[in-house]
Image (cartoon, rainbow, N blue to C red; front, top):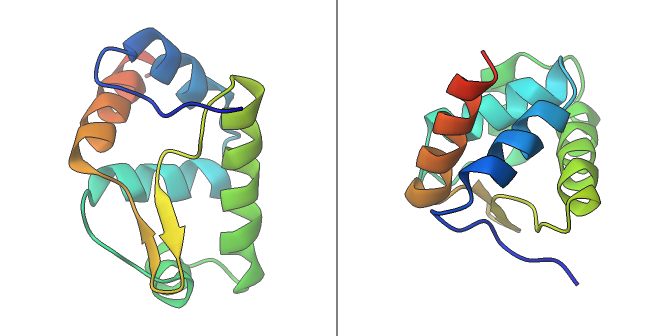
Amino acid sequence: MTIALTPTDLALATELYGLVAPGQPRELLDYLIDHPDVQIDSEALQTALQFPQHKDVALAAYSIGESAAALGLERPWTEGQRGYVMSADTAALLSQARSGNA
């Protein structure tokens, strides 16, 4: 069973951010952090992130999901047919975590 990050989970969010691999996974996570409450599909993400192939978005999302699962966490966004969206609260928390990993 996995749990969602809450606004009081800064240490856990910092650990998650640090586990996300540099490169495409980190670029995807940073994009979602920087665009809270914006729903975007994988094709638009591929374009925005300039990933060479469409599958790169799915592979990056999978990698982040594996890092989250290793900590007992859900993916830090919701995902569906219409795309990915990270809540403003989660984005703010992960933005703080990113600052702690700089």
